[in-house]
Image 1: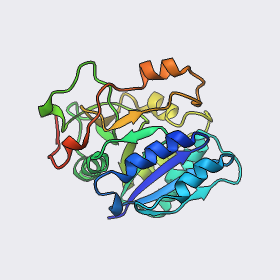
Image 2: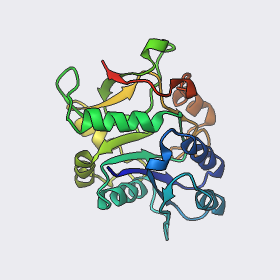
Image 3: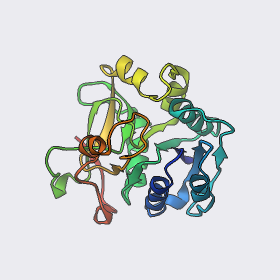
Length: 239
């Protein structure tokens, strides 16, 4: 089974290094292939990838800037062309918990590939690694998942059949947002699975594509609770 991590990055070397550092600490990282698509213009970002040695990597530095939407499409298209069985997509501000890859692998193999339906009978389109609950999840819910309408873009995974569907249905109308079309068209009919205790922390407080303030990002994108190394080696279940 070919497991691939695609990643996009541009101009935030400190964020990129933090994401790569968390990825290197993920349980099972040696079993994955990293496919970064990097926009040109920041040598520190490029250097961060060239120093990577936690798993096999095939780096692409774009000849010209493509923008978030097109660059993301090119990244996942590489996974598609390699016939990846499991694909995780990350951005340069999505820090992973140590068991994040184990979660994504389980969600794809045990839910998406068998085409398990959500409790209301809808198809699960992807596995999201992010959640921002209103209260701290209890210990007995640290490995419990639920479903919700798509799309939460901060760390997500698909199997090959859904990757094919995404490539076919991709839209380029919005240069900065690749999820807008899917969210608007399929929110009522597709669901995503997500962990009650988040496996992704969003750290993109500065130089974001949408020009919001750092205070706005911290208030709206930062989740108060994420899994730590204490969460390793436990079984997952879907509500």
